Image 1: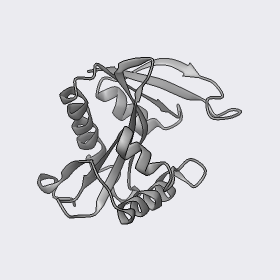
Image 2 (image 1 turned 180 degrees about the horizontal axis):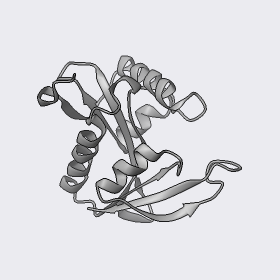
Image 3 (image 1 turned 45 degrees about the vertical axis):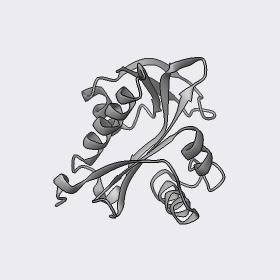
Length: 157
């Protein structure tokens, strides 16, 4: 069981190559090599987007990662590129706690909307997003290749 009162949600403002390597490996482990970002993209998102971590405690193990960028055509909107909880921490309420923390950070930053894409077959993630108020804005067929369809979900902050 996880002691949720010591969990820390941390926005990464600076980094070292060790942290970049950890995030890169978490990407591969949780998302698969074909969709994970690498040591070239992670620093760019840290500097020009936003990477938020959820950790067991201030110096503890990373339990989940969220990577976001702003939408150029609507600067009031953030787009979640990746949001995941490490496999060993799923189904413990960590994802909900993390997503609520992310939403609060975006509200603090005065954004008005957050969007993301999700595999319609990922029932657990779709359910979490819907419980927190996200709605399906559209279905994007072949979004990431032939027969790789996604829901575009949006939340008004």
